[in-house]
Length: 140
Image (cartoon, rainbow, N blue to C red; front, side, top):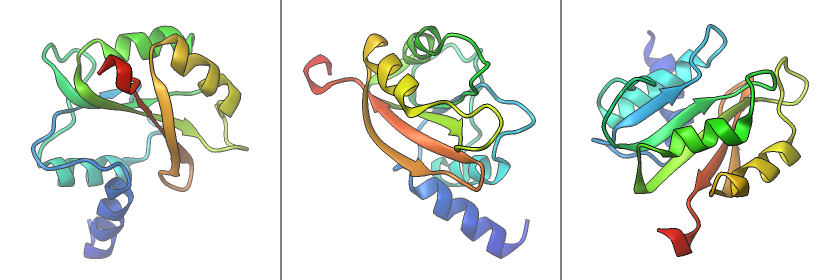
């Protein structure tokens, strides 16, 4: 990877607010994920992303989700199982106009049902947007 690509990867991943030493679990990996964002996340935390089979607590979850992936509420509830009290779920969905786009209303409806609160949405790359979900302050 070129130095320019590494810089872009870190710049994209820095929008997620992750820190060195965090354990980040990745859910929903497929051929269409943003590999540059993944590389940037690994660069920031200083280690590889752990997969869905990881059986310890995690500090953050990066969840790649497409409209036809199933029930979002169920998936979010599964995602928060291993999450620390102060953990965050970054729900990565295809941007509007891309295959698999998830409507903002669907996320807004699913998050509170799963016990999460939406705090922000970012552009995570050319094809993906990220929605930051956390446990409401009263539950932390």
